[in-house]
Length: 186
Image (tube, helix red, strand yellow):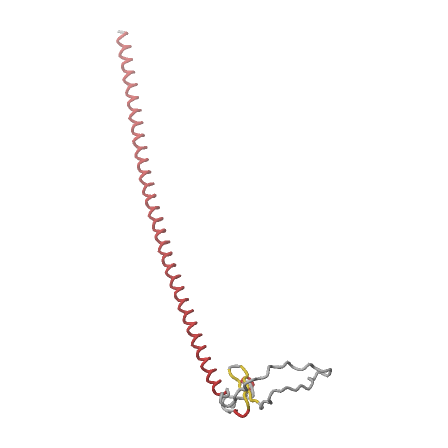
């Protein structure tokens, strides 16, 4: 009987040992399943975060692209406006220049002698240089074969001084005083 008792004790010990092993395996399997679930959950959360970050990044890229297009459109509009302004300025300058030329030609027409009034000699003498100064600083007497000219009258046209003989003097636009020195009556 002793053997039977030993066998029964060994049997019980073996069964307890097997139960403990099964419990430990079950607990270990349960922990593995929990860890697997946690890993899946963490992976899912990370994937959602990556998708969210990609969406934000793509939205930023799209916004930067839109801003670039808007800036390019503004730059093109600014260039077009500058071009128009330059063209308008050139047209304005040309208009002013044309008016100035027209005004000058009108004034020259009033002040200039007519070709029929002063015929030019067929052979004019070459221009002579001024006589050398004397010791006192006055020029020496100098005679030439040139005809003596009539006294002249000064006509001021667009800031230039033009001379014409006094016999053809007109009182309208000509004066012996430059425009800047004339007195205006008020």
